[in-house]
Image (cartoon, rainbow, N blue to C red; front, side, top):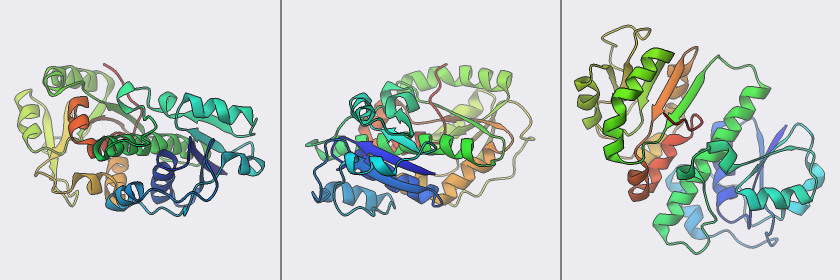
Length: 285
């Protein structure tokens, strides 16, 4: 089975999404393309530079038209479309695989990536990070469907603003207690430890090496929060690392995990942190 990541020109969103899937799901055959791609157009150095910063290896050398890939797509394959326009263009070719698009995957306007062509660097980084999140969410679901995996349930909450984050912490704790979730604070800010403790949460800290302090209470006890003990000096690389991937899954194995990302306003200011949102589908409170 293969995963196809398709955007409009095969110059940005599909390139970075495919690179991310290859890193975390190395046994999956991943191909990228574009519904309006022109064959052999070189990839932008800006996109290649961001991918390198995030530790993602791009194997493509140039753009590939989606039409040239259609004959190879099989019924069990997954086709990830970057937006509704791309999905509609894909359907015109009547491929055999299952088609999903970014918006239906993330179910959040905050994480719906748009075509970043000609955007300034900060906006480009934001759209690329959204593309990574959506692509990995789709690949994760696909992997669970097709392979024997530990029982886990991961959901992600993206606060609208720092102020709304402060207001929603107690709601999150109540929901977690009622539904049996562990909470992972993926903002990676040490200041969050104090905020959670003020609300009576049982907080366990972890460091940049993802070494977990001994929990003060059993993980089966409600209102348990995992938060960073120190500021992360390179949060994007931490969030795109295999140790982080394994850390999140170790917390979620045979449990329910609720991930709290930085707020939407923070993501606009620090776009790389949208990489924190790729482990579980968006959930509203």
